[in-house]
Image 1 (tube, rainbow, N blue to C red):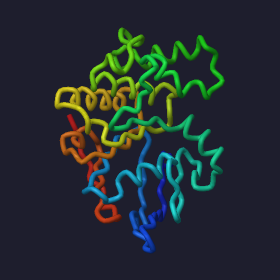
Image 2 (spheres, rainbow, N blue to C red):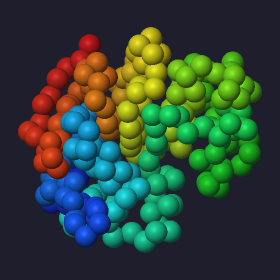
Image 3 (cartoon, rainbow, N blue to C red):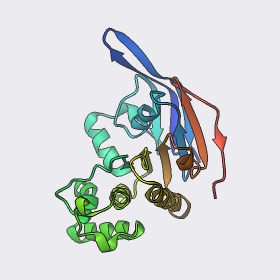
Image 4 (spheres, one colour):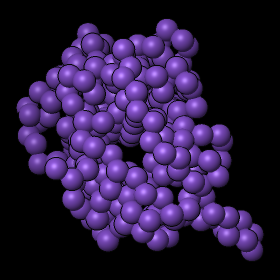
Length: 231
């Protein structure tokens, strides 16, 4: 089977005043289905940029990015929005929950873009909250939840559409050690038991220990693959 993510000769630069600053240089990367990959590197190395390209939140200057066999660099803006809704689950550092919505309503949001009935949406949301062990808190608002609980709601929202890939940008960066460990254990469970493909940007070696593959970016260049078997 081909890799679930194929990145072929991808480069990306940003304009700063009159200068073009290269962020990624001729990146080639394959990610297998069911893989848990950590992207590491110093600040400004291009980690989040690469994650955003894979998730179609940004566009490459050159090269091709195939996810599930679809070259997302060829899609229009409308096609990309539809593709993201169906194929990418997002986990952010600061949760990005909507304060006036309950946990249930936050998790339901991605499903409003689908053709599911209200009853079907409710079943999907309850299942996702059960996976993250928060079904008892579904009527609570974000302000009534701890940081770790808010991140678990965000993970439930990310998995509720059963996406092709999960992308996580510093998912434990705003959490204390105990909550961070719980979130990493949950991501490990999603990878091992549900076979979710996870791509995680992190600067924390303890977080990276949960991944099966670690790749490092340095000044826009990707190092050789480093595999591990975390416990």
